[in-house]
Length: 348
Image 1: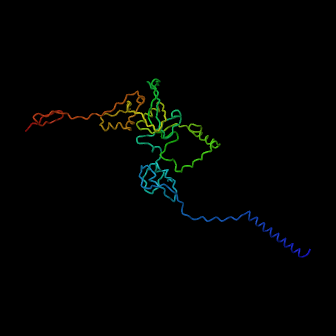
Image 2: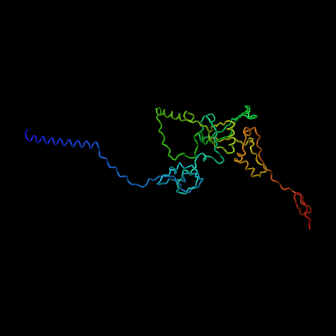
Image 3: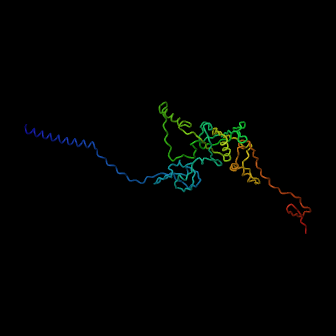
């Protein structure tokens, strides 16, 4: 073999080895790509948190509204603060708050007590499916309270001929029913969840959602039936409601909230109270006896609730004493009165 051919073959062999080395190195580099350097984290100011603060000075006992509240940034997130104004509106402030100070959760009163009007009290009564319009009652509804009362005979025996049923209270507001209640504001500080998109009519998703909705309704399996209803009742009527619940059975009749007709108890004889009004009261004290709180204190017994007791007589204050008219002394003289005796004053 000529020398030139051997040299050419050696060069080609060396070139092939070099290409093999380069291919091997490129393959390893493609399998393990170099890690990109993480970009430097920019140094920024401390994270700001928004919390509800008073936009003006607020005093204790003030119902909170949006015009007295605003959002302000804070470097620290406090667990006792609010982050949404809507979560504070409707509450009642329990302490004075200066302008710019945060509204603390422990300083805001919430609950159904804020839904009571002056003179009303929240009272719970037992209910079941039959006594509450088939569990159709909801917080915020208005109901009429009917009473079924068995007749009471001698020695506590039951007399069927005197069993009665009648309207006990008209148009009572429902504050709570079962585990649901009517609050003056939202329960939590979280924003409202997004609405679930409606399923396509006739699809399988619609059938599943319909079964889920029916399974969570009142009275369905897996849910606790309501046992109590909380009503807003005038304080002087609570005694009648308690006696009706303990001695008989109460029924809640659901009514249209636009229907404001109520029974006029002023045209019927009022039952005699348990405690009689003390005699010898003046006119002002006698009028105070008619206040709802005092009537509730006087109480009512089962006979008065059933209408078998003595009707209460209206208390009339004693008429003011009139001065006794005496005849004028004769001859225009002066008369001295000592007790019940009179004597003319002798002239000098």
